[in-house]
Amino acid sequence: MSASLSAWAIGSFVPALGWALLNFVWQGLIIAALAGGSLVFLSKTNPRSRYAICACALLACLGLPLGHLMWLLGAGQAVSAQATQALPAWLQSLAGQLPALVAAWSVGLALMALRLSVGLAWVSLLRRRCMPAAAAWQLRLDALALRLGIQTPVRLAVLPDLASPITVGFLRPLVLIPAALFSGMPPPLLEALLAHELAHVRRWDYLVNLLQSLVEALLFFHPVVWWLSGQMRDAREEVADALAGQALNDPRRLALALNALSLQQAACSPSLPNLPSLAMAAGGGKLLQRLERLLKPQAQASGWKTALPAALLACASLWVQANSASSRAPLASLAATSTMAGPGPIIPTASQLLQLPLNARHALILDDSSGAVLLAKDADTPVSIASITKLMTAMVVLDAKPDLQETLRIAAADISPHIGSAARLAVGAQMSRLSALQLILIPSDNRAAAALARNYPGGTQAFVRAMQAKAQSLGLSQTTFVDPAGVKPGNISTAAEVAKIALGASHYPEIARISSESAGQVAIDGRVRAVRNTNLLVGASEWDIQLSKTGTTREAGSCLTMRFKSGERRFTLVLLDADDAARRQLDASEIHARLASTHSS
Image (cartoon, rainbow, N blue to C red; front, side, top):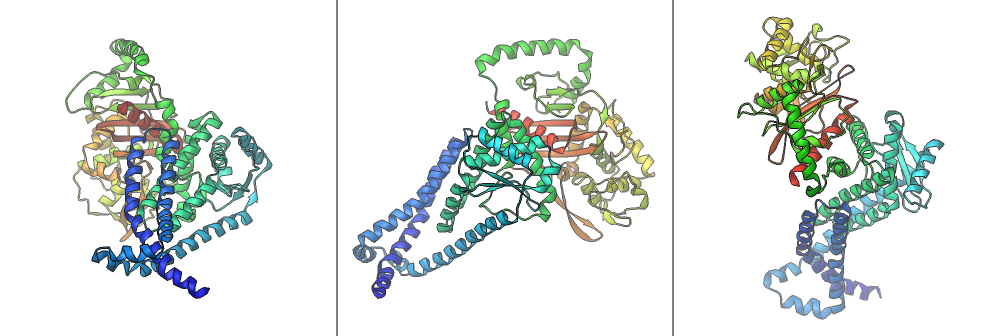
C-alpha cells in the first residue's frame, strides 16, 4: 500500500501540484488586474464593497490552483504523460523541475505554518497573562456589545505591554487593553476604541483573519496574495470604524480616539513589540485614511441644486461684510501678500461656509493659489505661538549668511529649568550650525535654538532684535518676539500673521526642505542621531507637506502651521491654542479631508 501510494504521489500528485502552482503565477496576475481595477473604481465608496472584492479575489486565488489540481488529478496519468510530451521543449524541461519546485514550496509552507503556529501560541500566552479589567469597564463593554447586537459574552482584560487595544478569539472573544490607556486616555475616547474592537467581534473578523492567514501560508510565493491580504485588512478596519461610529452616534469621537492612540504609540513604539497579524488591533490599517473616512459624513456637501442658492446668498452676505467691517483688514492684507501675482481681495468660497468644528481656538486656512481665505476663526487675536517662533529663528540665522558647517557648542547659558531639550543636548555637546537648524525644525529642540542665537553676531539680545526687525519687514504689526525658542509666553502673534511667517519661511529652501522631512539624521558630538518631526502628518502618504512647524506650551496650547498641496492647489494652514496634539492633528486631518472632498466634487 505504501509503495503504491508513493508511486502515485511521485507519478501524479507532485506533477499535478507543480503545474497548479506554476499556472497560478499568471492566474494571480489576472486576478490582481481585475481586483485592482475594481478597487480603483470603488475607491470612494463604502469600504464594505472593497472588503468584499478583496475577499472574493483571495478566494479565487485559493480556488483556481485547487480546482486546477483536482482537474489534473482526475485526468490521471494520461494528462501527466501525454500532455507533457506535447509541450514545447522548454516546458518539458521545466516539467522535469516540478519535484524540486514542489519541494521548495513545501519548505516555504512549513515555515509559514511555523509562523502561524507562533502567532496562535502568542494569542494563547496573552490569555494566560492578562488580568481582568475593572468591573465598571466590563459593564461599559457589555453595554456597547448589546448596542452592537452581540449576543456572545465578550471579556475585557488588561495587559501592560501592549501598544494598542486588540481582540483575539472567536468562540471566546477577548478584548485586551494596554494598562497605560486607562490612565492616559479620557474615558470617552477609550470607550470609542472598545466599540471598534467589538465591531470586529460582531463581524467574526478574527476567524476570517485566521482563514486569510491560511491562504497567505499556502500561496506565500505570490506577491498578489500579500497585496490583496493587506488591502483586505485595511478595508476591514474601516468597516469596523463605520460600525463603531454608528454605535457611538459620534464618528468624530472615534477619530479623536484613534488619533490619540497613534500619538501614544509613536511615543512608546521603541519599547513595545509589534503585534502579529492574527490580532485585531485598533491601531491597524492606514490611520489618516481611516480618519478622513470617519470625518467624511461631515465633509460631504449637500447636492449642488440645494446648496447653490444658499451659497450665493451667503457669498453676497460675506462680500458686504468684507467691504464694511474694518476687522477684515488684516485678513485682506494677508490674502494680498500670499500670492506672487500681487494684491487682491478676499474671495469667499463654498469651503468658507462649511463652519468646520475645529478644536483650535484660532485658525486660518488660506488658498495660496488664489489668495482666498477659506476659513478664519478669531484669526486676528494676538496669542502665544510657542515653537512656531523657530521659523523666524531659522530665517534670521540664514539671513546672516553664516558658515553652516561651523561647529557650535551647547553652553550652560543655553540650559535652564524653563528650556527643555527634545534632543537631550547636554552642556558641551557639539554640532554644526546646519545640524542645529535641523534640530530646531524637526524635533523642535530649544537648546539648539538658544545656541544659534548666542552665536549670532552681537549675541542673543542682538538676535532677538533681528527677529523683531524681520517681523516688521514681513509686515507683522501684531507679532512680538522675546526669545529664539518660543518657550516664553511673550512670543505672540495672530493666526493671520503666522500665515505670513510661514509664507516668508517658505522662500528659504533650507527651511522648507528640513521642516518637511518626517525624520532626519543629525550629527552630535561626531555621532549620528535619529530625530523625528513633531508633526506626525509629515511624511504620511495622504499629505504633500512643503513646510511645517508645531509648538506647544501651557500658555500657547498646541499650535501648528503648514503649507501643503491638495490636488493641484496649495494651502496654508494655521492652528493655534488647540487642547492637545491629538486634537490639533485631528483638526488638520479634518481640514485636509474637507479640501480633498471639495476638489473632487
